Image (cartoon, rainbow, N blue to C red; front, side, top):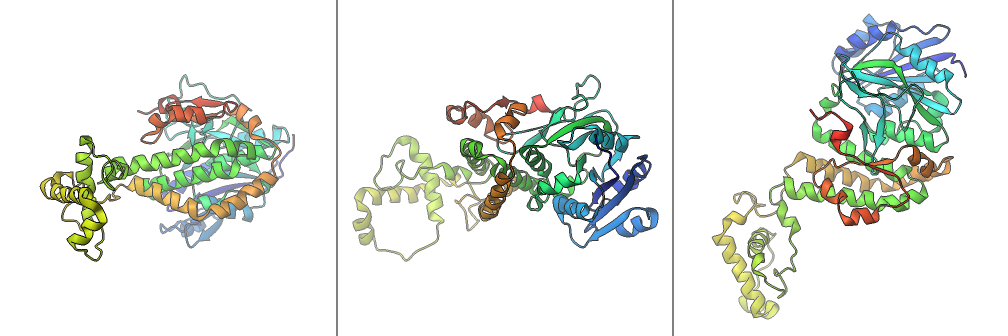
Length: 453
C-alpha cells in the first residue's frame, strides 16, 4: 500500500463545452482528503469557445489549448506531460462522475499491490440504467469489445473489486505516472480508439497488472464525441489500430503463430467489402483463365462471367490499334473468335455492365462504399508505416517481463464474427487448422457480448 501525494485529473475536450458544463461541476465536487488534487483540461482545437468559457467559469482548472485536434492519444499524452501528479486519472469530457468516484478510484490504486499499474472504474449510461464498461476482451487480431455493453444493470453480474482486467478503459481510469511513461504512454499514431487496449497489453507484458474498481462509477453519453468523426473515419481507426496493436505487441512466439491469421482476416474482410458493397465488385472474383483468355476451357457457366469481363475490357485504357491480320496472327483463330463474341455480348447484353454505362469507367469496379474506402485507407496506412511499427515492436520486445502465454491464460483471445464474411472465414477448415492448438480462444457472437437491441 502506498499513499499518493498528488493526483492529476486529465480531461480532453473537442468541441465539447456542453459536456464540460456537466462534467466539471461534478468533478470539482469530488473530495480527496489528505492528497493534493489538480484538474487539467486540454481544448483540442475546438471552435465552440471552450477556452474562454473555462477561464471564466472554472478558474481553478489548468487550461491548455491546442490550435489543432491532436487526437485522444497525443492530447492525453500532452496533458500527462504537463501534469505534476504521482498518478494520472483519465476522464472523458462527456461523463458525469458519481459522488465518491475519485476517492474510490484513488483508494483502489493506493490499496493495491505494487505491481498494479492501473485501475479501471465502472461506466454506465447517462441514466444509470445500462452498463457501458466494466471489463473488456481482446480479439486475436487486436480488436476489442466492452463485455456486457448496453445490458440492463439490474441482475447483471459485474467483476468484483480487485478483479484483473487486460486493460482499463481510457474514459475512466487511474494509472501510476511512472508506469504510464515507462510503458511508452499512448501511441500517438493511433489518434483515437484501442489505445487503452494497446497500453494495457504493454503494462501486462512489462510485468504489471490492471484491476477493476466498481465503486468508481461515472455516467457516460456514449458516442457523443466519437460521432463527430463519422462512421467511415472511425472504421479506419478501428481497423488500422487493431492491426497495429497485434503487430506491435505479440511476443515472438505468438507473433509467428497468429500474424498469418491476422493478415488472412484483414484480406478476407477487405475482399468481402469490395465485392459485396461496390458497383462491379463481382468482377474482382473473376478468374481470367476460366475460359476467358489464352484458349483456356470455355464452360457454358462462364458465359455470363465473360459478358461482364468483356464490359470491363471494353472500358480499359485504349492502346494503338492493330490490324485484323495482326490480331489473327497474335491470337489465333479460336482466341480471336472469343474476343469477337465478347464484343457482341457487350453490345447485346448491357445488363451485365455493373456500373452506369454513361460513366467513362463503366464496367470497372468502382469504390462507392465508405466502409470499403475506410478499410483500404487502413491498409494503405499500415503498408506505409510498417517500418515505424517494426521499430516500436523491437522496443516493446526489449522491455517484456511477462510472456503472452501467461497473459492469454488469464484473458483468452476472442474470435468474434463482426465484419461481412467473418462467419464463413472463422467457421472454415482453413481457419481451424491455422489456429495454434496451445493458444486459448473464446468463440463468441456479438449477442454474447452486448445488447444488440
